[in-house]
Length: 171
Image (cartoon, rainbow, N blue to C red; front, side, top):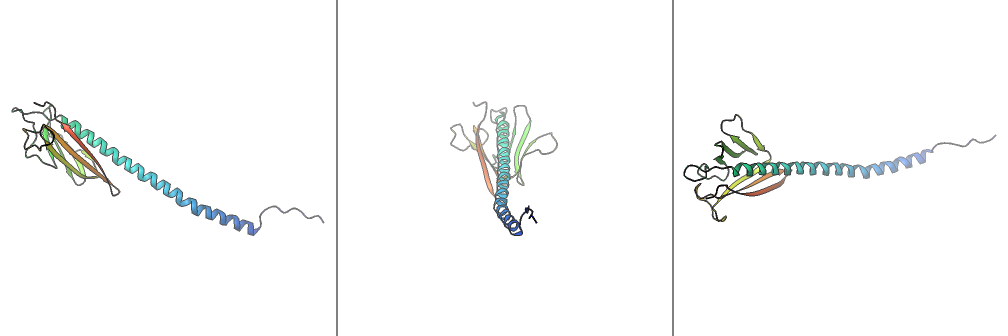
């Protein structure tokens, strides 16, 4: 009688193949998982940086519009605060920039609600300087520059941006 050729795998071959596949999965699985986690972390950091950039650009645009009052001083509420900036724009609209509970808010008098400019805020600090750019301003009569530093926090990392705004209509 003629012996028919055997097709298929032996049990030993199948166990060896499954062992090799299990080892490959154990090595490749964490690599793929780490890659996905790194991508998500990078995307979240980029989103935080984008929020920081947008908030700083908006703050610069608003601060540039500070008007002068009838006596030639900038129309900034006194005393000059390092955490809140309240002023009148050239179109006579009152603006308040402040921080509360990890939010930067930009509110306009006469408009209901308090729009949130950015979240994840760990600090917002204003500094006021005279025309020479180095001496601190004493009040709204000698302010020529306003510096601010905005710091956003995400996943334990701080992202900071600083800007100096030269006020328009210098004497």
